[in-house]
Length: 294
Image (tube, rainbow, N blue to C red):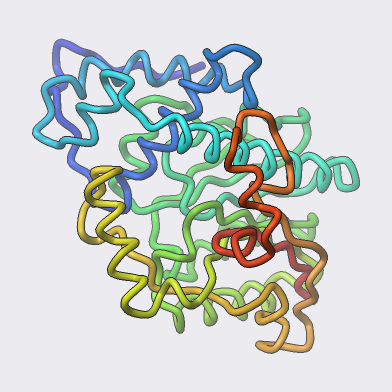
């Protein structure tokens, strides 16, 4: 059963860091696309949550939160985020088809209610994010025997002990829209720790081309995020890779299975932008990689 927010006792503001606020942006993109004609993604939980949150955001001092409350979100962003969510859902579903009682671990989950989109009735699912995010998420969604929320930094590896307590079930780790905002050396250490602690697991993560982490391109990206998306100054790219196979060089047990770009869908809602994806350079500005960790 879902928890609900008591509007009479909750102030109409939400205190989140710049990067954490992107979780709300993602949630609202899901909700907006779900209510559009011929939706890419159908996320009834996101619609339900957005309806609860909107009264709390209308009078916010944060420009982005006010935009979300009035549905003033760039349609191109809505489409891209919906395409990404659908693909990550599909990765998880494919994994669960092969491992019905497997575990899905959503790293940097934000407010995404993915569990409710992919639940097969027998999997174990973990949401992991910073304490303030999980604290707020628990006001909206209720945990269950198979759906657990862990309040911790992903770099506090103790959260892995909680996952490991569920035994030798196969594991897939998802990191959607997360790694690019984290320090490069910490991302590498995290991936190697996952490879060591969970041999045979799979990792699906979004990455950006390393050239966008360097100046002057990194500056241009940060300006776009602040001016067009109204994100804060902390939402900047810190980690990138040169190619999909780069992580394979970190350890012999890391094997690339496949990669995916928004443009691979050739979806009609991409409009004229789908032609941009015909360039391999543009296809690999921001994309997703899928690895096996042995």
